Length: 113
Length: 111
Image 1 (cartoon, each protein chain N blue to C red):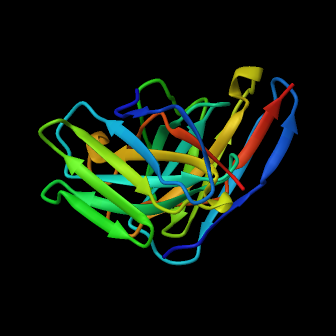
Image 2 (cartoon, rainbow over the protein chains, first blue to last red):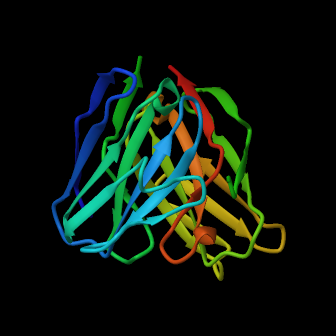
């Protein structure tokens, strides 16, 4: 199974600032995804991180707000831009080796004041 | 939008008892999975059941799938306090390898 490391694990941010979350996988995965989990809610898919090209965003999410990079097979970043309190959530990186199941990082808990 | 609705939203039991959680979904699937999340941390994959399977076991876990009813259940037998977590079903209704998660069941197992 893949081990996925995410950082930061938590942060408190000021309104209007941006924060970049890093995700490192210890083995090659075919696909990587970013999810958001708002307080007390389930997971919502933000986007699929594509290696060497622009991410594929789900409805309701846009590149200007959530720019994503994936320069190689094992590393991806998600930036939450121009944050507002509504962006306070847990952001989760995940990857799959192509077998169907997802492996998740421990999540990055963001609080925006 | 959520594909799966889980029932109950919360479940509180004593150690040693069995816990049953149900998941209903809306569209055709290739597989359904169950995940556990401890206290707002990362999710851990528990079990995957394919659409042509009706039942699957893994340790103290038993998962059933009824594609005619578009529903699945997760049974945890002989529960332990360490089973306290949120449990989510997820389907591949989002497309290839893209999972759509249900609303989740919060399980509390008291010693």
